[in-house]
Amino acid sequence: TYNLDKQVPDSAGTATAYLTGVKANFYTLGVAAKVNKDHPDCNLVQKSSVDSILKWALNSGKAAGFVTTTRVTHATPGASYAHTQNRDWEYDIDESVVDPATRHYCKDIARQLIEDEPGKSLNVILGGGRQSFMSDQEFDPKGMLHEGQIHSVPGKRHDGRNLIEEWKQARLKQDKDHSNFAYVNDTQSLLGVNFRKTRYLFGLFNYTNMEYENLRDRSPNGEPSLTEMTEAAIKVLSNNPNGFVLLVEGGRIDHAHHDGFATLALHETLEMDRAIRRAREMLPMEDTLMVVTADHSHSLVINGYPNRGNPIQGESHSRDSYQVPYTTLMYTNGPGFRTLKQRTGQIHDNLCKLNYGCILKYRVHSAVYTKEANHAGEDVGKYPLFIVIIII
Image 1 (cartoon, rainbow, N blue to C red):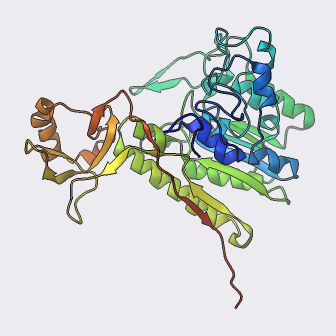
Image 2: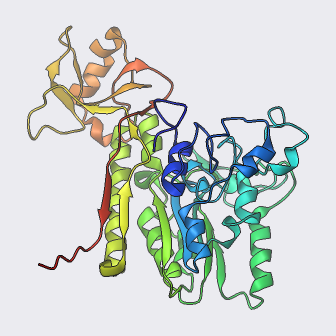
Image 3: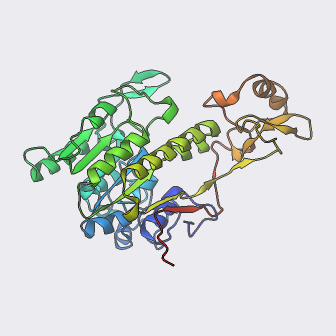
């Protein structure tokens, strides 16, 4: 899943690689290598577009969809339907970058999801990111949770459009009795869907990315878990007798790593594992192929010769050259860097007197200071799950 122009990749180029089979450049979505980040020629972007496995599924008469805990316009889900020279163009285009002569060939990622193939034909779209679908002249119906308070926030689109309503109207034209599609924005409405009749399910559960599993609102008006979304997606997609392709992303694993929140990342990984387990329970494994993988690695390491049984979230039994403790889990770079003075004072107390694993947003140590921890460049594992029958 490497990027063609970087030794360490980003999630847009890697998602393009494993969803289309075509290697791509850093920050680009759904386009071949002729296009690099911020390429000015939108016509070339269109000509260099490559289709994803979700598009292949739809073309063959199967159902297709995706589930993510990020924004539905984020890098990984975006690569399944969008084509752009910049993954950040989720709700508008940077006019200073593109050539005015070819500007009309470029669309923001949210518009591509609602207007173009394969996005507009996807049977399941579940995740966060209402901000990219609403006008900056209207306020989000649920607001945004920040530091324990709900704040009123407007959408981010500058074209005055509400793409959620446009999706509903497009579906209504094809289904006038309003029975085979549903738009949902919380756990209660998701669980209330008539899954036997629903063929198209669109869910946006947060203004931006969905909340971390251990921090989300679990009330009926809150956000569903990745497992609940996966179960709902399988129920809808299974209505197609020809089968389906489903992309499920535990995208906040990546976000927790970027912030240095190793404990949160581990909890997000456990929720991803629960979603996989639930999918295996629901599907006939004799004719189902599941592939569990990552699009890239992170710079997280396990170090310091800790003893067996030592809490993975605790300090190592080793000490550095100044006889100061450090965390067993550590990032090679990131916001968890501490100076020697910091580590011999406050941080030493945190490690010795507190179980920092219970502090979900504790930043474990990093060797080099950066605002966020970066990806790493080694190969990642790929684990197919299916039944193999060997006849001897």
